Length: 181
Ligand code: IMP
Ligand code: MG
Image 1: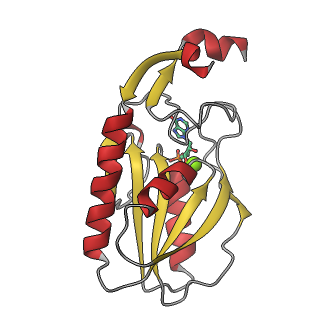
Image 2: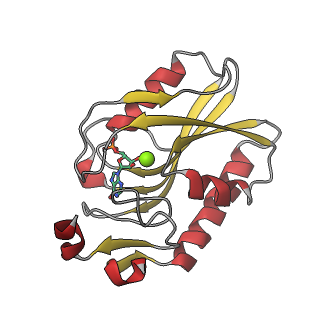
């Protein structure tokens, strides 16, 4: 099935799982004694959010936001629109934004600003992947998984045209996949 479309695996399932466990341990230590509000950025973050939460040893709640960034293309538009906002207010809360990947950083930098304006106690960011060469804005990502080169990747929540999110690893697609649409 989807496996046939894969060009190469950048990060294996074992590597992803070890890193998620490590991030959860760090977060649990840093937030000891506090209640964390995990804010997942849909849809890409849903897999990371689920795996991360199951390793957390601090009490936590979930909320989600959906923002538009890519459509089905592989280039960022830079335009951020809130498609789904948080269910509840976050004033005084310790907010941890959970993202799949930081590419230009434009989506995240908008989100951080937007959430800060709601006067939470703290706002931090956890992202599994980030592409340092692509960063167009100054953002502080406290919990970072892997740095990757500027290539388009799928798997572990990340999609191409809404597909491949279920793959347990992070991989690149064969060029003919983009051509056939
Ligand atoms: P940014 O605003 O450029 O940082 O874009 C971030 C969003 O673009 C992520 O949340 C992803 O949904 C999407 N994105 C960026 N790079 C990739 C990629 O390599 N594969 C799949 N989606 C990506
Ligand atoms: Mg996303």
